[in-house]
Length: 501
Image (tube, rainbow, N blue to C red):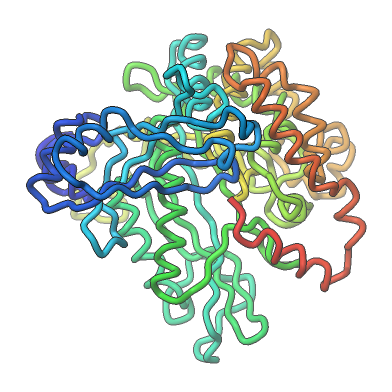
């Protein structure tokens, strides 16, 4: 970052300290606290339910502040993770200074930091979500010599009372503006607060989904991020979900990231975009086309895609979204700009044309390097995902592609450039693997391919066992067919998993 970027950064700590958050030290945190009347510190960390937990500290004196920043604190691991027994439950939580931000909701001036888990011997907790992602990115770099970057698209529904004015067209909310879009002020406030916490936002907009029910408008929105290293990306998504829920509470609204909240309407996903970097260069593109390296990572995802649902689709309602004709994938395939495929290659500014000067004749034509923009997008995950497990699983899948001797052949075989729902393509589609249709089926898929995820010590056997047990516990193998057409049962299911992830 140069000085102008630091001054414009929405994170007040970055602007004050004049250094990027990735370079924050303990001394920086103490310096900021001392000179900005900060009275409290919060440690935040994801537990087994995928949600952030919080531990509050009042700053008593400088020695106590130094102690908690250096040593962290003890927590009851058995209350946070199902795989930890009450007989040996103590864990340490130690803050990661690079994640520090001022709590935008606290009445008492407070700094928040995400924390990492350590076991009784002072080692990173093998089965913690954050450490699993760290292991995944390390293994990816060791195998490929490249860095794994991601960005997420957070979709959600907001519920507001229906006053009858300026009604939107049902299921036609994509990029709608106010007054037909009712929750623009909510979304922009969320974006402002997320930016203050350090989130690198690309843009926000209203999404397709909107409908009226029982006196309320259900309006879908999306906030999309910029690509950064995978661990930072996961941290930003976790904090963003926390921010969105708190803004909703502050404004007296209700919000949900649930994958499906009613039948026949658009569900909410958590699409993850990926790119691979080497020496600051995006390796996804070569000579204006998708590179062999990009095709190789896609092949890895094609090979283990059914198992990835175990990380990215963690509730029974997830599998009511993954149905045909709903702009959600069911077939294991990939393609260009096609929203029915599992992995989509979005437009990547590869035409080498200066569209800016064409749209603005007063602007002189110039070359602008757009090579960093190309990504590929995994479209199956949703808001029930454990974000760290999900991105770790995708990182493993992409690394797996580089370990597959037939990766490019797999990529070629699973590529589609047509509408997969057209009748004339039925035979071709019939040859494609399918995503699972329930949590139990997802657990089966993970069990078959668990060796891929356990390789290089990334996912611990205990974590895989725990995920499978959690998924099988829903006993939902035939649920989709059991309650088909039963609106009352569907409503009960939605309420049960309304605040997932």
